Figure 1 (cartoon, helix red, strand yellow):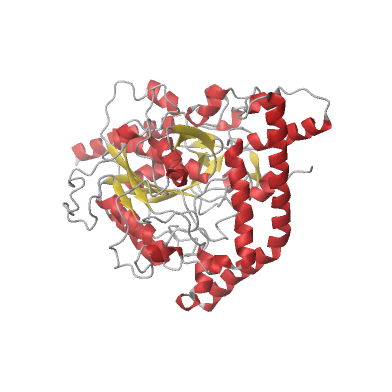
Figure 2 (cartoon, rainbow, N blue to C red):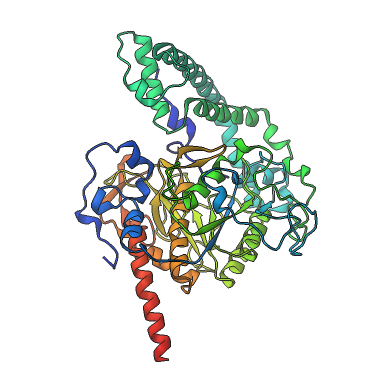
Length: 538
């Protein structure tokens, strides 16, 4: 499931309204009092906590003070996601091209099993929508144990129970937002308006004031009104599908023609990494942009890494990803030279988790770092399931090349943790910016999106920087640099957006830190010098 969050635990809850060179210590830092400017918000993940009072990753500082006049090697970053708009003005120059393949000849020139895989591979074919994993488990109960089946059935039963009430609320919401939008359009005198336009409205008309309040809340989530309407309608449609039982009747996978329960059945999918509909690859395009949109070109935003190529693996639909696609997707990215792989997806059930575990171990054997989103359910994943992961028992890691990322808000202080972010003292490794992140979206557009989906590629970008300028460091070393060099946060923060639930930041991840590119590169430099020194002495 793609991990974008508009706000807190769910869209329904979010939108309900009533009519050193060593790690920095941030204990002396203070929250920025002034409201962030548009430009600051667009690049807050690049800013520096100490200098700007914004909990970014000190990326700009790293470029200005550490990377100036330095040359790195090209690093391939695998984006396992919904697909990427490889024609985007700010991405097309950083798209990976398979030089071993001849475009359009319908021959598997490099004999890797994928015909004409010029820019990656599409394991979904023409699929955009998919079932959730618990739905597939209910339909195919013979493939899982009784405990897993009952857990999946319990989720479906609960959704049905909640469905009638939620459906009514969302229907009211659709009507209220539609009406408010109409009032604002009439008031401002134009069909498309901004949050600034709404804020400027002065009126004594109760209907206008109510509409203003509603649309202020809508626009606060960073998406245009038209997209917010689509998201509300999508959630409403989802409840209708569950109430009608249609979620258990549709087999989206059959159009591919493969057996998703047979890992050896690999002849499926195609080379169209953008899929059949550009509108459906917003997520993957945004993730790719966070890592690699061209820096300093005065177009859109800036990527974290400046010397990368984006290899696209389309494997994450609107629904839950199949374990088979993720396992094969990871292997594909590894085999085609990726040194960092970003995985901004996740789910609570994984019937073929061993396939993915084996793919993670394969990546480790090939010295590839996997950066993974922690999830957006405001849960403790030391207790609750979140797949894929690197520990089958949530305690002992079977590999040391996967790093799990929680999401930060742009407000330093007790609201530092994004109110949707999962946490885990053992199973979340470190935090990074994940709220209102500005990056590429399809058709040469740019948007603010949020989720641990956005925090993960921020870290993947820093990892790519390290691997570019210090290529002899291993994936394991890069993982621990990211964790150990981060800015340490010692104060308490709200969990789940609950002002009454404050917890020590240090208790919410293994490192108790937030990723800092400047510190990470300083630590990488020291580690590299130590390695050279030991080699000379040896």
